Length: 251
Length: 161
Image 1 (cartoon, each protein chain N blue to C red):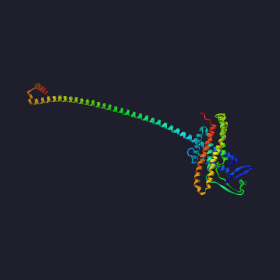
Image 2 (image 1 turned 30 degrees about the horizontal axis):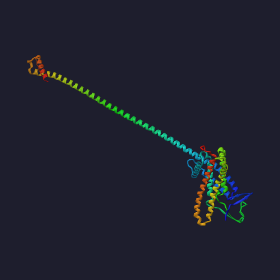
Image 3 (image 1 turned 135 degrees about the horizontal axis):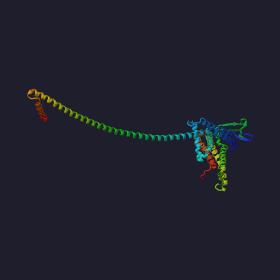
Image 4 (image 1 turned 90 degrees about the vertical axis):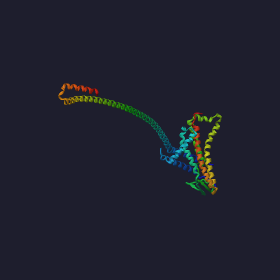
């Protein structure tokens, strides 16, 4: 039987409780981790968490340095850090376990009926990676793409507007398609990788005891994929922002 | 694949909040600390390089001072050597002069004493011979003759001596 997402309807608006729960949990974990890491800041005797956080800062700085000019991309270091930590933790959260509730007959959450999709019995899956939800990844992707356009328009107006007509004005439709494709590829790449990983875990779980070695291997691989995808998302964010807003003088 | 716009909006809002919170509470202070550390390290590097150049300068000065001192010591020794040998020569010359003078004095004294002794001997001998002669020949020769005889005799002695 398929696992359903627990949904409630309030005034015609559908709330996906699992996604909301995971967004809140991931946000809370990132906040707590960052607060702990930066609680006792010290110039000459950094603690372990502070060291780790400084390593992450260096890492994101190197990403910005790779994608664009570091001096001018420095202001985006906070955005890059937030993205990479949030996405990485989000990617990993769905890996270690799942929470499934069985429902026989209509069940309620805080007095609201859960959407059973017309069935009498349903299995609700409460625990997953927030990044295994297309709405979440598209929200992240659109945020950064919108930011890149805004910054391009504000700081680099002439070249930003001109690039739609490059190399000739006849390329305008192609450039518009590229502009529309950027957030789609950015968001759906992340969603696809993480969602596929979770589907695969579900498949392996159905194998029973024989699946344990495969599960171990796949979870290790998923950790790797989660890290890579967080890196790729941050990298592409910086590349897009750099392309749009930071005009290099030498070309 | 289902796309839930509520989730989309919630994610937008929560990401905005998260970004705002982290920027304000975590990354701002952290970046500040890292910048501070960078400056502190830069300062230490600068002061280290200053110290090193100071040390090099001091070593150079010390070397020169040592060289100077060595040269002065050498000069002093040389001077002392030359002074010493000159003094020694002076002393030797003075001693030689003194000894010469002493010798000459002594020779002269000896000469004088000898002459004196000879003169006194002459006088005594003449007196004694007068005495002896007078004892021997008593009244036979008067004093005038006697004296003449003695003088002759002494002349002979003087020639022989």
